[in-house]
Image (cartoon, rainbow, N blue to C red; front, side):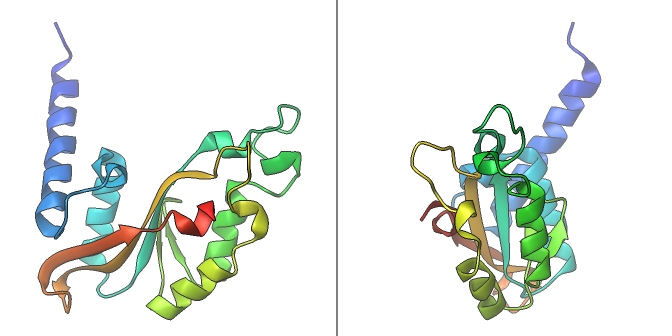
Length: 161
């Protein structure tokens, strides 16, 4: 017999994904079908209006390419997920659970993306630092974004170029 609490948890997670899908004007990409990311984006969208964000699904393999230096990209100390998170926050992002990063406006987000360190970007034969990233252009449920809508676009190019 399966655990009834697990059944309830799964139903709640699916409800959260469905709720997010209703306020998006597009089909949900795979990153937003992750229940933990979906509920985080949904919660943040209730609190903040008209602040662009990036949502990152990290790839731990991108930080473990040198076995003798775990959690560091290229085996170099300081080239890790925390360094990227610190860079984003130092450049104006507000961090939510190391997954959603809000910016005051689009130009601030674009400037931050443009200035990402080169080691964060795609490198041949090394896994990328994230499996997916999206830019949320309007993260409001009751703001100027046409009522109850969240608009998004792929943002993988920031890390994969």
